[in-house]
Length: 88
Length: 447
Image (cartoon, rainbow over all chains, first blue to last red; front, side, top):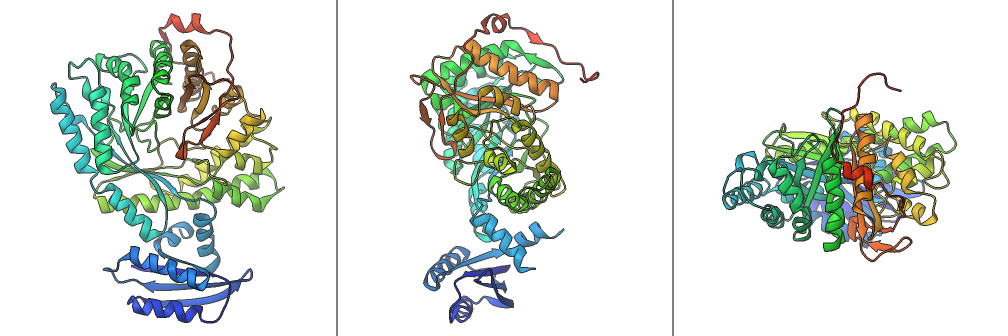
């Protein structure tokens, strides 16, 4: 599944590193990555390839846990939802 | 994909209560008809639990994968009066209990279709079903019922209207919550995924997936960016927002249908509020510029909102259906509750509002001593609005025994709470006891 991973929150050292390390552990490949500061918030977006056999429930739970540790909000969603809402 | 678009979606879901209100599987029970009601009930149970066995699991997978909450998973079935009519049973409580048992097995939130369509007349099955309603609803938890008493093509069956007033007041005495699961319609639709009024029409396929979206909070948030601008800009903003919300519903519905290997039916474009803060249709109307919903201008603002939601949603999905409009239930909407408590929103104004929006007098708590004929007269008024305006209207009122005007009643969960509203004390009994049929209206010379 092609998915979009978003990270929004207070900027600090090591967010990209920690998130990337987690993705590598889960065998999730990063296809594209961009990052900016929007309205004072660290905002990162990654296009990723999640292996078909992955346990999404487990990954989401671990991402939520990682988000709490880093004090940021992390979301992982199938990219189709963004395409459906914003592209004709 | 651009940053701001992705963030907009995330805000809609996490801060503005955007969700898919329901994924509803419609299942035909026409092939379960049997003159032996035990055999029929077994066939009904087997068919529902087979066809919908993966409904909850699939919806939960989609929630997880797409990160979109799907609040309810439901099933709608063929009106039971049509299915049970073949039996000689004296009441249909057994059928209701069968539906309830199937719903519990599946783990769904509601099952709709304990219904009868009697706009022009009643069969024996219709009569038995209507007479069974109070007990059937009191003895089940997840079963929803509806009765269609009128249509623009055939007029209003006033005998049925009279009877429904009696059913509602009788059911209230057994358990007032029964009436939260009962809707009286004019021009009922056959593909409605929302409850309590959902049933699976006879012209529908054997099995189908319909989706109901929500999103009052998203519309309100969008309107906060166009403060003070002309109303055509407000309408445009609502259209654009409804488009995005509906696209999400279309996506969820089509994925669910594909995974369940059944045809995808319709997206219902309704703005369905919940009692949660920021999920209110009333607050959209207040954002448009009313100090409180119910004041002068409410009908106009609601008409525009309802129309703009349809215009925006209609291009966003392959097939639109169901009720598709703004819902104005009192107990399920924090803004409506506040307006009733403040005395700004009256029953009469709610009735006027139903002329321009979906669906009708909904989740309105009334004093327990209200006469059955007055409830019937409310139903007749709503049905007349629907009949003349070629739209669906409905009544879901809840008399609460022992409560009087000014008291409050708690329904719980998505159903919220409501202040008991006053009604007109002057009798309509002589009109209601006449019975008969109000003829279908002329469809020309519209003034």
